[in-house]
Length: 332
Image 1 (cartoon, rainbow, N blue to C red):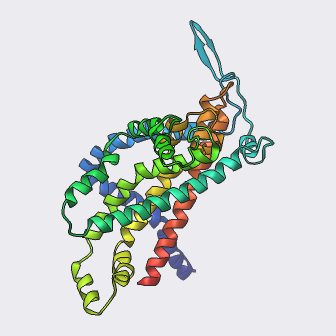
Image 2: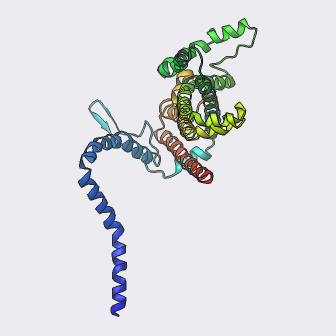
């Protein structure tokens, strides 16, 4: 009997250790790094107010039928209280299986838009980075010219391209001078998609190029010298030295490019607006249209689309990171 009691005592202590250990580690961390905790606290509070509260509020709205007619508001001295009700998962069901079927066309185009834009920006940025990494005359000038689209504010760039792509703009004028077709870039659905990808390519390539150029300059030159001594061709040096050396940078910029392009609101909205452009609207602009582009404004539906977008990106990021970790483990 005494042996059983003594055997259970360490077990109870072990059961209490994780909780006590976590609290103890937090206390020791606070005692040792109280200054760091104090410096981080304002940032945490600001992020909680600017990100945490809107996110929680948006998630709660997705389970209601909130719109501009039943949300509380103040008119003069009169206050109209909230009158929306809890509807559960109805918004998600209506978005995914509703009779209007607007979500899935926007979802498919968003996937196509993201894949094509990221592939083109990464490929173009890699090619330009390889070229600029070579010793050539005027290399600094070329780098400056290629970085300029990144330095110019996005809205200025998009408005400039909107003028160039208009019916009497510079692009169609050039095509007419070459006796080529002059598409309606801002009104024809397919031409809109091509124009959106081209403008996003112009905006996104400088970031990819600079990132790849930094990765190229971090690869030891001894690896290229050894490969050249072994008789490797330029293509073999590119595939066996350059691409493996760029793998850490590539995995990061591709993930960032996917997240940014998936949520690329500026290019689509500023280039085409919200009218006569349903075929080129991605999910984030579709959510914006639900919120601001109709009457009554569908707050709950817009929030539901936003939460779906967030969920897709979180799931994709998790799988992407696991895939990267598994590949690194296999190569190691």
